[in-house]
Length: 197
Image 1 (cartoon, one colour):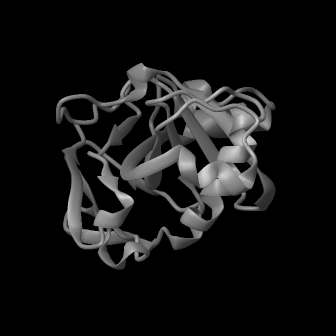
Image 2: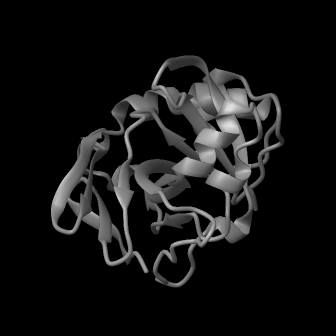
């Protein structure tokens, strides 16, 4: 299983016409309700919410009109970045993995079928830190983009059953520190909650 991440914004929040793609290893996933453990190689961790789709069949060089048949479940992720490390890497045109794909850098919720989401098209998300809403919005735009994204990803990587595609369109994130609690909901249903330790 691989995690394919898509970013549509640069560090300066300049919109990208094509997504920046990078991979995370399976060890990036926080397992079993464990907390996020603040790594010792960074002094600045930011968190953001992502939409995640789980691939349900094998595909390569998929045409956009068929992309919607390659996933039928979505979830949300709390994604953590070492932004001080990322800034240094980006300034030197170096790969992002040590800042974005380190062990325990993503907590992923359970998955729900598309017909379980309220109204079938709402996809309203809320990210809360210590009881305060930090990010709100709709994944509707992401859903409209997902078909094109799956086609784009499959031009470079064969996608397999169980692979995850994680996408962010907002470009927003917020800083977290030891002692914080963060949670994510989708259409009013809590999907994730974890402590920062």
